Image (cartoon, rainbow, N blue to C red; front, side, top):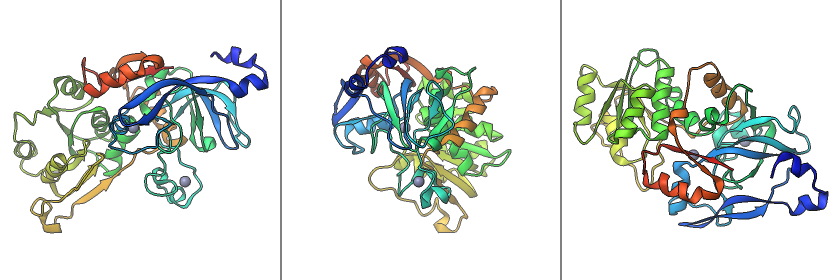
Amino acid sequence: MSQSSYALLTEQDRDTATMKALMFHGPKQISVENVPIPKAGPGDVVIRVTLTTICGSDLHILKGEYPVKPGLIIGHEPVGVIHEIGEGVTGYQVGDRVLVGAITPCGQCNFCLSGNWSQCGGAIGGWKFGNTIDGAQAEYLRVPYAQANLAKIPDELTDEQVVLLADIASTGISAAESADLQIADTVAVFAQGPIGLCATAGARLKGASLIIAVESDPVRTKMSKQIGADTVLDFNQHNIVQEIKRLTDGRGVDVAIEALGTQATFESALRVLRPGGTLSSLGVYSGKLSIPMEAFAAGLGDHKIVTTLCPGGKERMRRLLELVRHGRLDLRPLLTHTFPLERITEAYRLFGERREGVIKVAIRP
Ligand SMILES: [Zn+2]
Ligand SMILES: [Zn+2]
């Protein structure tokens, strides 16, 4: 429904107005359905979603590997236009174009005020959309704590230029930030999926001297070089640890970024690290993760291991928007396919099966 046709509705019609949304009904059960348009309560804003995408974590939800409650609308990467403003939200107008991060901190709890926005209210608590509240794969989305979470999009930027900032860019770039990457540091990035590619871009933005990516998929290898990797090593063709040691004159890298979430990549990341280096982990692990003693110098190697959940909030989004606006970051090549919301289940299949050289799919409600 367009903005103007909505305005012509009476109050009563609005109470029964519906939208299309992707509903999660349990593992392997998703469908596009008509559901009521959300309403803005105090502190909320409802946006009309103009572009969104599908994340690797949505695939985990679909497979039942990450539990969310049936009946939820999933998705957490929204770009949209303000449709309704709740009580107490100031500085915004209906019609403003906004980007909202995948993580929506309240900005007021102890965790937020300690600077751990993503852990708002407790572990992983900042991730609300499509996890604990209805998400973005819908025509409309209720944004909680709107005052802390709506970043206005500069007029000159298109939806396609900014949609990947909500999650994968914020997450990927954070790997180099959390590692406190120094100018001229050498970096290895394990896996070049959407987040790993953004980690490569982040290492370049932070001033790495040498970026070695590890990936075997030819499409991702090509994109990795395009986005900033100096060398991409195929783990089917190289002994990765030996080769990275060789490329760093035997020292090992200053920063190793793990962007997959497996024992093998975590362990390799640790093995290629120089003494005193930092392993920056972005992967989502399942089961048990163990640390081999010799790679960890028996705990005496001055290694640092840091983890980061996607930084969110409007200031984070504003900063990422500025990177795009000033030409430092262009993620449009990662949007390899576009689908209308009505056909999002096809997009899930394509993305999940990694067919047709897909990296990210744009979903247009
Ligand atoms: Zn995500
Ligand atoms: Zn909070």
